[in-house]
Length: 214
Length: 214
Image (cartoon, chains in turn red, yellow):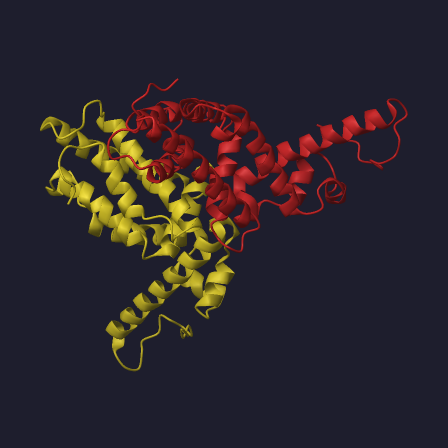
């Protein structure tokens, strides 16, 4: 893909500001796609803005016009992935039934199998970002805490109506579900033919709850 | 630590070949410790031999005398970690009872909580190495396949004596155990106070088998 980067703020001959806006959005999207690929392949630390810029046939200065730093670009890539995820998984605060939330997690695992680049990025980044010095560290700490809280609440809501298997504690169940999803991604990336992430997650959930998983 | 690297192959004034051998082993161990820290912190791709050499106060050339390339050094770090692991987990082929193997996995999870640097390295590397171009890719593909096979055999041996919960399939159970262990490491690295890897693994195993976990 070629992107014209000569003075991106100048009014366009046709389309005016609206065309210019649409073009800028398309450019941002192209950069985010490229960044996802670059960071997924070599991790965030090893991936360079120069490489991202080269993939969209821009100069590094042109890229910095859209994303002022590597960590801002990373944050945008992660925010984009989260938007997609939340389209598939609805939590209690939006009025979802707890079994609908768990079904959403299974759908998310199935969807992930269609976007290996995203899974690679997430896998490498969540590992890299365990280091407190990593620019995405705070993001991942917060993301895991929020996800843990939301899934624990889902299991707690099930517990209230007798929907958990004996001995299942909501907090521990949430941790196990998140761990299983993360760990299956590594196995799937190493051997896609042998691992069905959605089926394995469904198996696991079936051992935690008493109601059928949609 | 300071390591004298002036002509490491020359006979020592005292101790002769035996002293020299011991010294070389100590040097190798110091390099492996440093490499583990460097690779754990920034991943394998971003970690440099120069940085490893600096930590043991050697030149890069001195380090290359012991480990001729970065990927050879990485392989040695991984082999060392595996040695430690296999001291804790005994598999069927060494005559271990299947419940002893599962108990060993719980002990391994507890041991890992005492070596955060190793866990960091493993976490970042297994994620990075999902890329086929990574020098440790073949190592991780083989390692996961072997571990999967061994743990599946453990569950199959339990199945033969009626030791599995209804509906538990040995292959899927093995995958879930490996996934859980991997995923818990990420959560533990992000929030050590809240995650007890050994306890969570024990909970999970208790839902798969009918016999008590030692």
